[in-house]
Length: 440
Ligand code: NAD
Image (tube, rainbow, N blue to C red; front, side):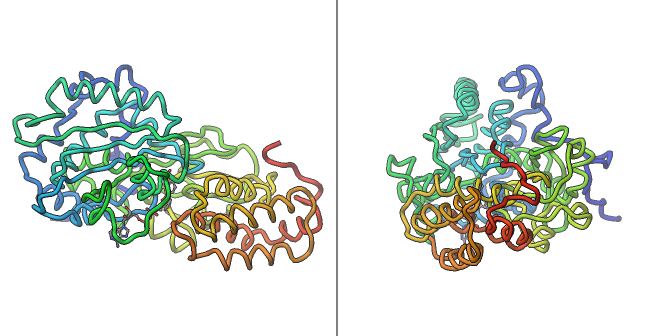
């Protein structure tokens, strides 16, 4: 028999949203609603399959981490040691802070049991007994919904000892961050959970070898755990049949900037920018010049017909010179100065740098932000752009964690694509004929 055709477009009549299926429904966050709509069926199937079969199922589904890096989830789970006698931990990275990224907050506030179930499945597969959700401090509402859902799950025997008679013990704690972007870096997050300053740790060792309190730990993003819930409920083939050959499943794409309907759209991986921007988000409200494809650490792409027809998946975006990242698409209009937009990004990274390593502390937080400040305040001089490029050369690949390199994404791509605007800024002008500051 012929293999079923993969679903690569949300226009395909076979496509139905799952992750966001209940967002916006009354009482969607309660256990009663969740169970009424087939909730906790995935974990029951997981218990029936056994730990190792669950890991194989996740591998087979082709799921890749939805935090941004796209690392194969099943493979990551298989790194956890077997029967080593130590406590195992699963961590959920809910410190969603990448500018342009706002998908996880609604998963947690509108459908918290979906996440709890995904963590239960992960905990069971990896022989963990404890799960932590490290949630961004500003997400107060989502944290409250999570606390309430965990309480309900405990009372119903879905968390705690001998869950649903399976012999599996597992509980989840929610920990609120205190407002630092670096806490989303997985090793900094673990330090923060341990009560230490959130400085990143060197990798390797990776968390499966030595994670929280030195124990075997696996950390996944909120959306990743939620996807696992549906993979166990509907099967690996169902998931592998959506998306493209190497980028499977659906993704929560976010779109912001001057479009008619900004927001979060659940679409199969491989959906084109054109579909997202025009068919779902209602089209731009002004003329565009650039696209940030997946959070500001990604390289900018030009707003061209070719890019609009590019599928949003890991491979196609890498081939286009950028990355899928968090799927947080931000549009930059022609009226915005690219130098000033990039200054906003650089300022963000400088503010969020932990200051531990010299290239980031002195390079990004010191020199880079000052150079941009000079350009946007009309004090640019010939040679400034070259100096920025030289600095980037000395920072790139030399920092302790990914933060400094992430800052260079918008810097280098904006210079490459919009050098003329930098030349203008060296003359003391932001845009031909004046231009306005985006944050004015
Ligand atoms: P990474 O590629 O270093 O790692 C991704 C994951 O795979 C990690 O869990 C890591 O432990 C694991 N991994 C990678 N190589 C491994 C190996 N050899 N053995 C075992 N495990 C391995 O990326 P990262 O620094 O964790 O994350 C960078 C991404 O984070 C960027 O793509 C960016 O888009 C994203 N990001 C997201 C947010 C957000 O709010 N969601 C914020 C900032 C950055």
